[in-house]
Structures are given as C-alpha cells and as structure tokens.
Image (cartoon, rainbow, N blue to C red; front, side, top):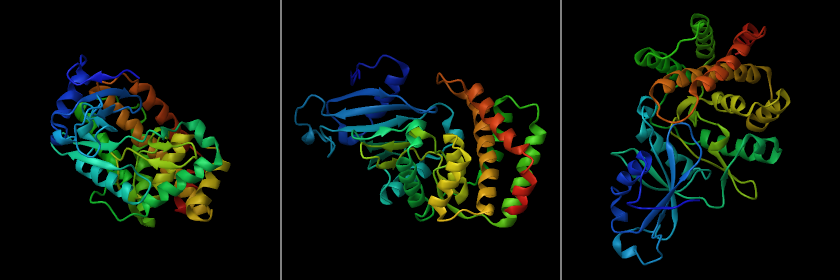
Length: 326
C-alpha cells in the first residue's frame, strides 16, 4: 500500500478526505497518514493511521485509537439522493450490538462520515468465497442476527425504494428502458400480492453484495456498509443476496432452509418475486448514478445486466404462480 501523509494530498479525493480529517477533534495535533481502500461503487474508502510516526500522540487528543488503523469512507457525489446518513449510522451501531458488525469509533454528523475500527485480520469476501458452504452458513447467521435486531427508525420498503428511484431518474434526466411500462406493471402486481400477504418488516442491510461481507482466516463473517439499511420485508434480504451471488437453485434452497429452518413453496415463491424487484431496484439506481456520479464505474453496463436478470423472472412462466403462492 502507498501511504500519504496528512497535508500531502494531491487529488480531489485525497483533499476531500483531509478536509474531513481536520474536523475530528480527538485527532487534533495527531500524526496522520492514509491510503485508499478498493471496493464500493458509491464512495471513496480510506484506511487512516493515527499516530503514524510512532510518537506519543495520546496527549494531543488522538483518542484510544492512537497508533491503530481506522476505516472511513467519503460520501460520493449524489449519494444523498439515496442515503440518510443518520439512519446508516444507527444501523451500523445495531450491527455492532448484534455481534456481527464492526466497532464504530466516531460519527461526524455534519459530513455524515462514520469512523470504524480497521479489521486487519478480515478481508472483503468475493463471490468465490461463497462457493464454500461454511462461508454461506456463517453469512446467513450474520444476516439473521441483524434482521432479528430491534427495528430501526427508518422504514423504507423495496417498493418505496423503486418508487423513489423512478422519480429520481426523471429528475436527473436518466435513461428509461424501452419496456418501462411492462416493468412498472410487474412492480404493481408484486406490490399488490406482497402487500396483501403482509410484510414482515425487520432491519435489513438492503445491500448484500459480496464485498459487504468480511471474512477472516477462520471464515468468521462480519457485516459492513449499512448505508442503504432500513426496515424492509425480511425475505428481501436473502433474495437480494441471491441476486448478488448468482447461486444455483440448489444452493438457494439450502440457504432458505438454513435461514428459516425449513423450505416451502411460499417462501421460495416470495424469494423469486423479491429477487426480480431487487434487480429492478438496483438497475433503476444505476440509471441515476450514470448521470450524477463522478466515480470511474460503468453504471450503464451494471444497470443493463440487472435489468436483464429482472426481466428473466418477470417473463418467467411461473410468475403468476409465484404471486398466487404469496
């Protein structure tokens, strides 16, 4: 890794980070250095060392993390359209309390930046890690623990999310799929069926891509990144995870049994419907990000891929059956 001393930042991203670091009172006068951390498609991520020079900076207000590494992210442009930072911070605290999150060291309300302990013994997982049953099982345990935690202050269902994104696409002049009317028809059908069956609203990460699961050498799992967290339909958490992992039908059944303690047609049907809605949600999000984000990421390609998978389920011959089973 390439460390940068505080004050030596050259790029816009580095200078934005340094502006935030100067606002942490406990680090006033501390020797700081930092380096970028890869991952994420909305923000820039950073590893910061407090007391990097090895001198005693505790008396200068560096806090208990003196001589240790911490992690923080700088919100990307436009993320305020999707993320309520106070709600994300509450969810981070909830995850820490349930035993599967990361220690939260500080929160800067004016910038919406959280400061976490840096877990040197953990690394971000990849889809390949989830080919191993033990990792999948430990991930399910972590998700279930967070879902079973006390409710959050913010409730935002999958329907709220898609509705919000559709409005935002129009506001920013984003691309609209040629079959938008059909996609909205399917959304309406799913909304009616799921609402009639009743929503089980619990804390959900709502962002279960592989990189948000950290694993160590013993395959212990910790959950990170709760920017999109809210109370949402419980079954959506697994459904979105299945979207991200591209599990086979056999593995999906295994994970449903692991999470719920059983497999049945109703739960399986609910999962299929919510998988389609999850891909629709993130495809619509990508249409907005294509217009507003400054990060070097192909949001159009990402959104196109998500829409293609959503259509596979929306056009599936069992779609009417899944809705009846809900």
